[in-house]
Image 1 (tube, one colour):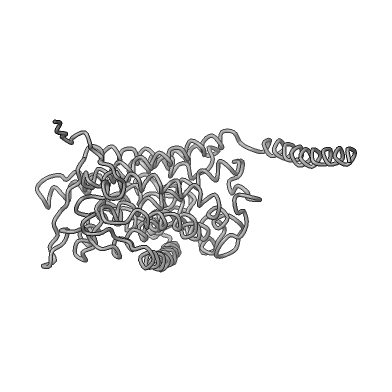
Image 2: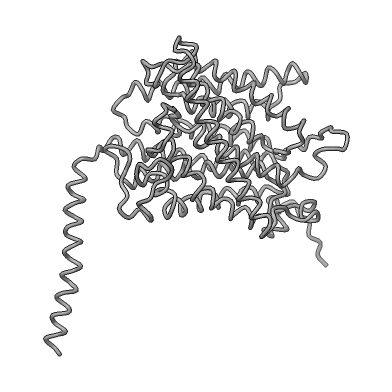
Length: 445
């Protein structure tokens, strides 16, 4: 018995040591092929994109009423938490697990998964992609603010990041079918923003407008946000994070000119978007509106996300100007059809995600890496056709999937809080907190 116990001990230790030693040797050999500078850049970019969650939280909480600020912030918190876990278990495999035309089928829990970026470890590449997934889900939270059940929102957030978003990501970035048609989306105008914006549009439509937002005669009453300084801070944080979003998508510093071109385009387009929306608001309302200008910056950032690597700096200004027009047009359209979007997420991300993707077909330059020259560069309609095909396919899939998902959640759990909860505020009713509890007055005996 003692001899048998000794054999078992040696066998157990041996089985543990052999794979561990082999893994260490494999890791050491793999580490030789890693590029330290590229890995550092991808990690820094991932951290910048993660910091965008703060920006989303600030701008969304600032643009809603004080009684719902904590609820919006809680949604942003769980968005990334679900994105990290869902993308770890399911999302990465669906998005990058093989070159099948529709979905990936390997790498669940990252077991056997590989990095899709040369010279960058799997863990670094996964982190960069996971923060993108979190961004797509966060877009939804602002569009349904002030009336969406938190429990239902958690289910929607998880399923979007774990399954819906990765499918579209696979089509474009994971070796799926759209890559065969020359579709170009460098950093995610469609994959992230149009997908998130389409989910936001679907959710806002199904949950309905806030109490008092629209009237029977078709007119709309503005419901002002409670903290414009916080909203402005959020916009600037998002702008800073966007340098990681766009320039980080190069996944390398081997071409400094490329990274620098992306950075300058990520500066000029939102600047043009700000001035465009500010000017239109000034002309229409007699005053330069801050909230419209903030969304003008974000619209310009979304619009330049797909073409940022393949257009000139001059073209990026035109893209930003049109993005600003899209923001204003989008807000007017939503008001006419009585879809309530408290933070402007649908025009900013959804409509401008489409515009940014199509912009490759107008302004893209083959000399800068576009599959073909765009229409305005003498390339004809070929690239524009590829971009339009990708937009239609991705938006249609997202619209149908989001509709089925939300209708199912509505049937099982319900989407909207009660009228009493909405009037009192979701902070107290759903979370038992007040965002500004210091203003309470307590009377003592």
